[in-house]
Image 1 (cartoon, one colour):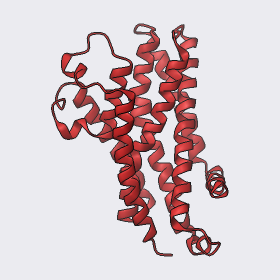
Image 2: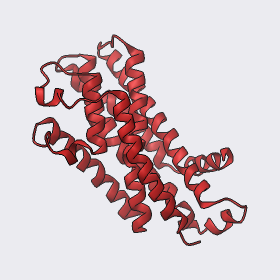
Image 3: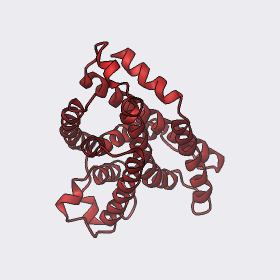
Image 4: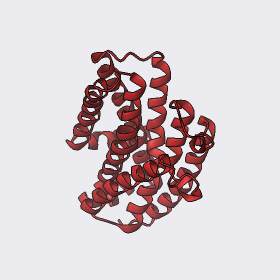
Length: 253
């Protein structure tokens, strides 16, 4: 299994897109730091901006596109039949791809936090508790992977080409942040469907961990603890993972 994971990582090393995403995720917090310094120069405000537009928007989009590259590699190169003759099962292959996505999610999240920390230090916004913020950043990486598992199932179900999958990743990322904004504005706070969406669960967990001053009572009543948020996301992720394994098992060689 470790060899399979290593092979999937080697495939990504030959591609420029994952490296470009890493550069973008590192540059983005620094730009936000310059913007936040003009307002109040507070690290909490900077982290809030990075959370909303980095962790909730850019990271799911990036993982969705990288997932597209991983899932379509054998189909594009017509190598699935060769891999199965080793023998490697389709389930093992998909599991290796998901492990790579998890590693990338955590790595991207860590890189984005370090860039946020560097940007904050550059503008004089010093965090009071770096380990807490670092742990939260890594947690958001894991949550981002669980967030895109429905997208993986859709890719396998629809057999879309790369362009359609990339567009779907963009739409999914943008739609998710729009729902979060509607939830935060009180428009969808009482909607049970919106409250259970993965991106909204991440937002509710963030409110419980980094409650902003003056938070409305309607939002305060909806905050989630870390254990509850992870349980909800893991439950949904497990269900969509099972669907993905079934669909990938039906892929034609």
